[in-house]
Image (tube, rainbow, N blue to C red; front, side, top):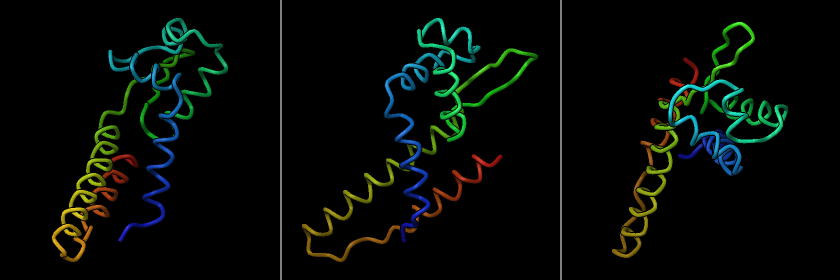
Length: 127
């Protein structure tokens, strides 16, 4: 059965990605680790706004931060992006299965793998 916290996790991640500046930052980080200064030059937003966006992305586990003296280095947390992708694919697959079952007059399929995927993703994010 779907648990409320699963929806909360997905909602937070999707909400964070619903901002065009954050999507631009993610696109820049696809090229590899970058400093806050490098990101700021490319995204062209004020430093406090960049800091806010980076905190949001780090807090939900899609970006990691490495500090070296006063410099801050950011990179994508690819495992958590993969987990997010798996969550969305699982929802799509389940939806297709339900639609097929309805069309054939069969009972709706169970959704046990959803809990397992979220548990795995949460364990990876905690590490």
